[in-house]
Image (cartoon, rainbow, N blue to C red; front, side, top):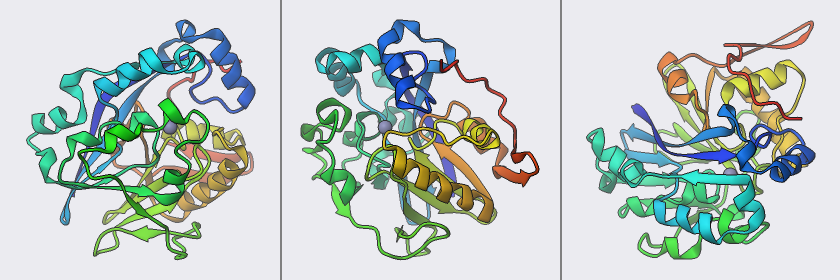
Length: 301
Ligand SMILES: [Zn+2]
């Protein structure tokens, strides 16, 4: 199985929002506005393409230029103050797949970690795929910021609507529920609520590593490791659910050799090429993580 990471655009956040650990840090970021942003406040939007034996599979799709433009001109003031979206039509997920010799028409499954527009906004590139959406996520699509943060309904016309699924009460490692998607059971959906209520991660088992596609639950694998080293729990929107998901993730990566691949990780391509498990070692001074974080995060004051 080959895994491709495609960079399909970028998000520029106001300083302090990316990797924020408290609601206060996010609100202070909004107050500063996006003109305050520095280098680590710009994150890529990634789309992962897996050439699987059962057919091509895509995890998160980025956003197309039309939707990005609607976000820029029509979303509420707070959103516009906090975030700028940059998309180039030539580097949307469809054209990029063609550029590496893959046909978007051949994609069988599109998996969305959640329905935020920067993950679900590129589905129109996959006319023959089933687009799988966790029912809890679908039911919550009109929650806070629903109009522009969640995928807008018109985008579903032409792709036949989402195929909704429920997770089965089948434990998978530290997770209480799961849903295998392939005959071999090597691609499994896991519940990771926190960023949104219906957020999921996708675990893909290979011969030596589990690839864990964590959507927006984490920003970067290296930051997550560094946070655990310092005894912190990275922040997500629904704090209580996040703390529980973090505990399970932490157990997951210690139980299985895991490479964590979030959707906005600027180091994802490098980490994929290195093909090494995230190594969290619990010692006297708390968690010790290798590879250690090499990228300083913006100051979250
Ligand atoms: Zn999101």
